[in-house]
Image (tube, rainbow, N blue to C red; front, side, top):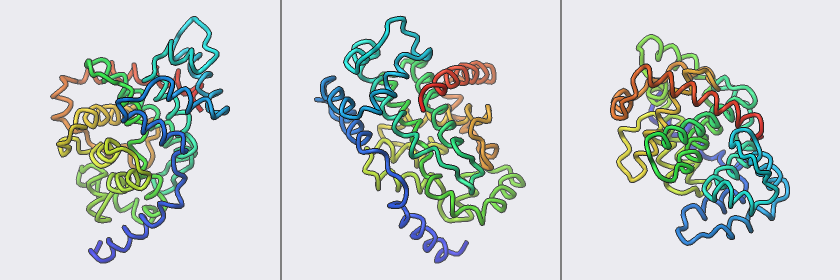
Length: 287
């Protein structure tokens, strides 16, 4: 695509950001508290308890098989005590994000709930992998996984006219979809997602996750480890065809990242099975 045409398309795509349902205000408040080292459990209890529907959803998931607590959780305060504030944060964001991620994206061949299911599976996978490798604050990995593909929300309607060409080139040249996407359009869903994260005033973590989740080796900020783990989870989830879409089979793993964490073929299969099992348990109750 010519540079001038690419720039016009970019402006058109980004100009429509206001038409995309933003994350609920309560999610922004929770994200702000996540980044605030002085936040307290009481701060979160006050934010969540003001939303009756969200409170009901959170309590439903808190009592699900995914968390497996034998004790009944009846209040947000109990959820904070039993699950912990970090887990509660991710639950709130997951329960709230469904409205923004549920819609179909014809351009990417995603039916209703496909983007949501893929995002939730990556969130579950990132949390599981981060925990397995001993990272702290694993709920940040969960939330990052949940919001890693928001660029598809905005770019989806515009890529319809180019999707066949991009897929054909990716297949013929054995090149990752995101790279061909950028080659044809001049930008890709990663660029659009990063811009949308800024538009939604999300913390810088989510800018990096969106921009680099297919090219984690390019991320040199303090968020690089989270980006790497989300990349691993993303690739494993695609291998299980969760929210595969028209593009999913054409993404290439960053082999050096898998090698860095000593994730060989056997480890991929074991992690993939764990992710799928955990995802299915959470999916039943989270919407």
